[in-house]
Length: 339
Image (cartoon, rainbow, N blue to C red; front, side, top):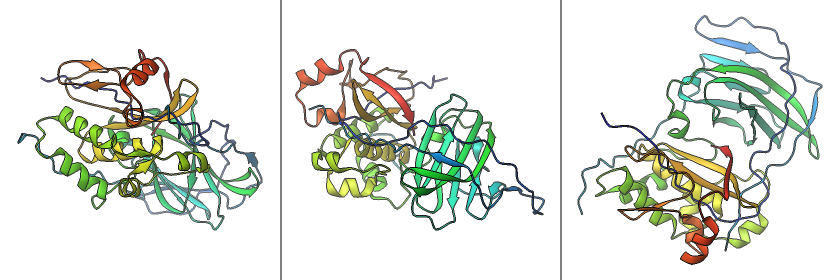
């Protein structure tokens, strides 16, 4: 039986930035009343009003720039997250649908009118992810694995002052370990009709295995031009749009990672979008799960024979010697968040 192991492939650019998931403590869960509900659902209705105020930091956006016919089926495999309505925590302002935690995600729907709303998710590892909500159901991965998660939605009051709209602690038993890295989410946003999905199908045509697909998509990603203007002007709460990035042919490191993660997931290859530091620069890259390869720590390129360290986004604008000198043994890269 083939052993299922993993390959770590970084898609990063050196970019100093302003915003992707800051840690912050969230307020305690508020007690609530339970309304009469259908037997097939479990809905907790929380108070419509809160008086707890929290000061939330702005998120940083990783932007840094460091200077033959195959046998594999390339039919897109686009997992579709759903708000099933089986386990829902709700009040007049927001809903938290925890029906599919076994697949490694939750969905959150902000129903109010406040123009600036934040979501915080804290897993058992103590890492807090901060997202910007846009209204309507959005998907968020449970990156800390099985265990307890605290989920809280906040409405802006003024400046960086926020009032708690809803808070709930949920328990997740994730049975699909790759689920968080196959489903689309806010940062890796695609569907069956997305242009990145069609492009990934085209790139994967003629590939014989997953590694061929990764190589083709990697080579495509290095044709994207790094956008220094965008890196200098990007605002807190920035969310990448993979189709727009592909159309424009330019982006920052978070864009590179989002495009590649979307393409690979749509080909059924579990892929993590990771955010952290390359040296002192805030970066985004990917790790990809491949059959019969194994974990390769750091950033890598495979030439068909040997593995060597490489940063594809950096590779788009830096010489080989500069690249290899910076990357070294991969210890410059430190993961902080996983999407």
